[in-house]
Length: 75
Image (cartoon, rainbow, N blue to C red):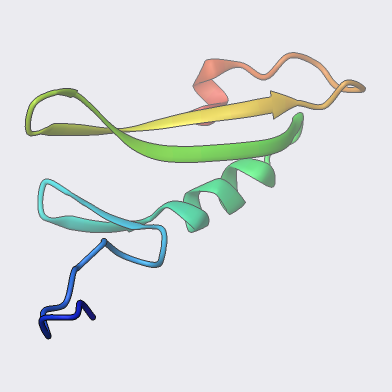
């Protein structure tokens, strides 16, 4: 609350995003990626490459003791 009685909305306090009208829990996607063999850690985020066009992007760290993760496994 501000001194003048107005409230500033700073955004959501969770990892939910809305893309093309569909609500997506980024944490759920990260958890699913982390369960794949060869993935140690994953991060998923909504990125806007073109104005108004959000896309999901995933970054991950491979396990040192496993084979390389194929892109086809991630789709």
